Length: 332
Ligand code: SF4
Image (tube, rainbow, N blue to C red):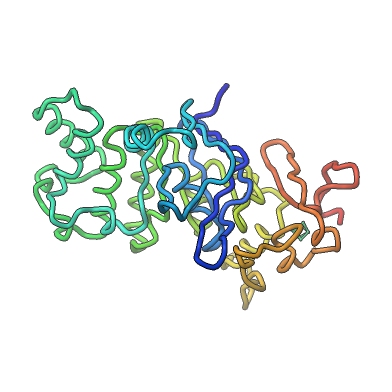
């Protein structure tokens, strides 16, 4: 069975005046209809660059897909023309950004902004059909229809994010990319927006990539989780693998050590020591070796293998013996 989204060996760089930034370095990923994947990692891990590559919205002449393939619903995104991408964006894939105010036009009524997407992508619809659809979409995302004539500044942060979701879902895309969609919202509104996204996923069977650094949000909403570090996926699995499994990449273990656990009487958190490596000058071997408490000589010299075990995959020398067979972190 072919996947809705298939990314193979994706390499993306940004060209600066002085140096090249290696933002995504050999990323492989698949996603099926209706699945929600949480893409987790620190700032600079390459999460947003991955999403912008799928949308083909990397900054012109600066962000370059150097290598690899992105196939979405049978379309080769890396080879599609700009004209094709304008059609595919909105109808096949949409993106929600962190701050709703940056996505909305402050001087246009919100109903018109939803209608504009329909006019662009569904040219056979009459004015009446579009009005009817706008009303349906407002109801779907829990916005009072009578408020469609208002402007973005007249809405609260949570309501504005609902409008952005309405715009993103207007043409029922098969894939939704949500980049920190709740970070700018307070906790109560955050829960409402996440519930809404969950409800819409069930109604419309939309696949979602949720970009976040918040493992709590991932636990609540995602069925697949990919952990990114320095432009690579270093661990991937079902939510159960990541949250309940005993074997983890040392970076994943570090991420979990950085969040408070109310069931334990710990006085201090255990943040990951050190900083993300300089993306213009990435370390050899395992890119995490400068921060990893388990690093050995081989980690500095050789890139770690990606070891699969059922639904989980971990990219680390700790899990491979000399024959490349899988070991357990507990055996080490
Ligand atoms: Fe640590 Fe080595 Fe595994 Fe990298 S490959 S995470 S340095 S043990």
